Image (cartoon, rainbow, N blue to C red):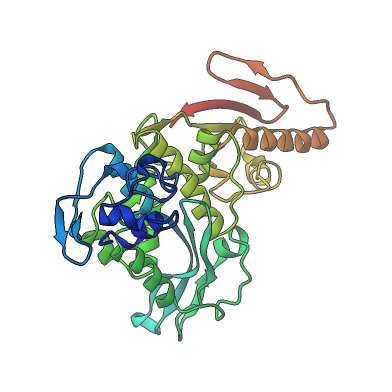
Length: 368
């Protein structure tokens, strides 16, 4: 019929009236075959299709529609074409996340230390896993620091297994070359880890989206992916690997896109605990045996002050729940040490205070 292939297939699904094409059909609107002027598929309105000028065909002895028809404009046609994907390449979004270890290469003064990718996760906007794979370390490298990948990423520490990094690179580059969108949290580090730094310059910000630039604290500071996820969705992210982080990133991206891609302010605090009043003789003992947290990775808490001269020890936590857990842990240790009941917590103007015989603990918050 001279139509786009998918449109022609849809029309033929009901059957085209051959007599209508010859201009000799006598049944009009009562004809059970398609005349091309009504909804023939349920998905689009073919009345938006203009059959164009008629031409004389001597084989049928009459006029038939031209085989080079013109398209009528209007919303109906646009909807028809969009429904069939005619003349349109759908732009998709893919979230990318990588995990790294630190390695050394070379000897002596020529040795250099750098990060290499050991796993990569790619998730589509439909939250489907496109790729999750281990990436083997380059040859002739010595592992220097793999603690994060072991503890947080839960990866087995055999870094010689996995796909070559260039395989993951080729997939990510293909997405960009096809016009799709890459999404990440501090994505520059992921692209550098995949040796795709050139994409940062060749693709615009509308194609390489760093969500950490669009989700910031009320003070304009950056935060962690897990913190933004918890603040937006009201639940804790459960990511333990590159694929899980990519999925969380894509969920945030879908939320951000549904909210007109506007900058989003997050009401985040640092939750502080300050210990002071420790005697000089007891400071080191308290610091390492009593006041230490069970977990000290930066995703949980950060050591802010460790001042033996002032005899002050300050920790800041990313969540109130983590601070409360730490506070109760230290209180139990102190109560067991002094064989006393836990003293009450007093609410002061800007903080809460708990006083033990040889140490005082304060809790206070600070907006980030």
